[in-house]
Length: 222
Ligand SMILES: [Fe+2]
Ligand SMILES: [Fe+2]
Image (cartoon, rainbow, N blue to C red):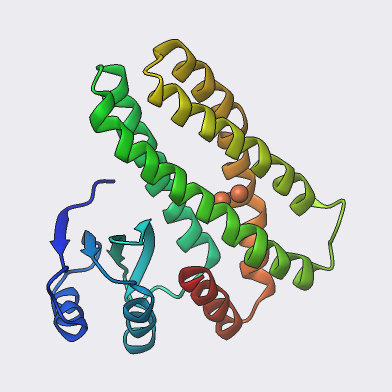
């Protein structure tokens, strides 16, 4: 998955941004840059075109905000599986592009991609811990000692290995980079599979369509 278009919205008014986004086609993806907080814009996107966009922050302030936005197929209902599954793919892509650059000794170009990967994955983990897992525990009645407890522990390890990757890149240490990457994959691959095969679909199934849409909007706007 590649971002197809860069959209510099630093000098644009919100209405103009929404108009430009409205011209995009289904499955188009853009990286939008803004130099003010995008929270208000994102709320309008969800309110005015409820099923049209998926988005995730790439970088959040204080001087610049960057977002990855994808135009959804609006005939598809919102689901946890669809949104967070897309976010997994998006993050995998950032990591592999960052590593590819690091492996060809382009450490300076690798750094911002790895930084975006880190902040994106940490945000993904936060919305799972604080919103999704609570919803899962509530609708299934399976609380502490269940799958979300395991996933929360894995999140701690994942964060540690991601920081290891960033440190290795800052030190320009290829062996340490590969070691930390192997550590990360040792947890992350199966972790994401468990979420996509069990936790996300179980949460989706337990909710009616309106509650499911509401939950995904909470994840999007957190
Ligand atoms: Fe997770
Ligand atoms: Fe996840």
